[in-house]
Amino acid sequence: MNRESTRRAQLPLNLRLRDASSFENYLVARNREPVERLRQAAHSVGQAPHSPASWLYLWGEPGTGKTHLLEAACRAVQEQGNAPLYVALAEKADITIALLEDIEQVPFVCIDDVDAIAGDRAWEAALFALYERLRAQGGMLVVAARNSPSAIGLTLADLATRLAAGLVYQLQPLTDDEKLAALRLRAQRRGLEMTQEVANYLLTRFPRDTHSLFALLDRLDTATLAAQRRLTIPFLRSLE
Image 1 (cartoon, rainbow, N blue to C red):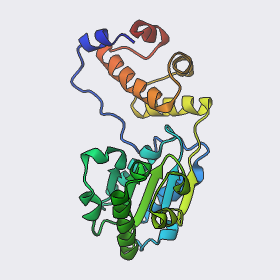
Image 2 (cartoon, rainbow, N blue to C red; image 1 turned 135 degrees about the horizontal axis):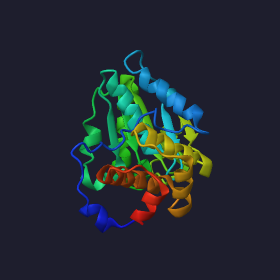
Image 3 (tube, rainbow, N blue to C red; image 1 turned 180 degrees about the vertical axis):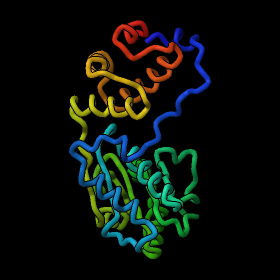
């Protein structure tokens, strides 16, 4: 795609916001059970205390939608008038351990990229302490990582045991056909018409991982708005 020509284009004022992560724009595919469990957990906040047996640990390779689902759950909790907390531990260089230590009376906590702190005893101890506080308060904890609790390299054995004590689900990656469906679903949610032919073209000409495809959709949405053009194969070729 010609980035320079895209930068030169004048963008209209009503630029669309980037998709908000929600359950509605996540293609469930083979992940129906973990998604439904997470949805139920988010919708039950404030109704009854949660126990660690109902807490969720989601793991899977990059592109399976772990971050999307955690953000979607927090959004659902927020829409019910509750205050969730989302923490991305992959960005721990920009936050402090005090963030975990200061969490009090939060009914729904999502910890993303927990494998990023594996081997760091101070962070592991802080997460363990958070676990114990949430258990005492009847809160809900959702954790995501690239691998299962026993395989991410935690040095605090009690933490690995606690994380494995709840509901552990491996998120399955999308097939190529499912990636096409997910891409068209995202486009539809933005009001961007994408034919099957265009979706097939994108999948054959660009990287097939979902991160790249959804980032490409961001750029195409902006480009079609700027050019006031529909998303067609000739238009795509003009951007290459």
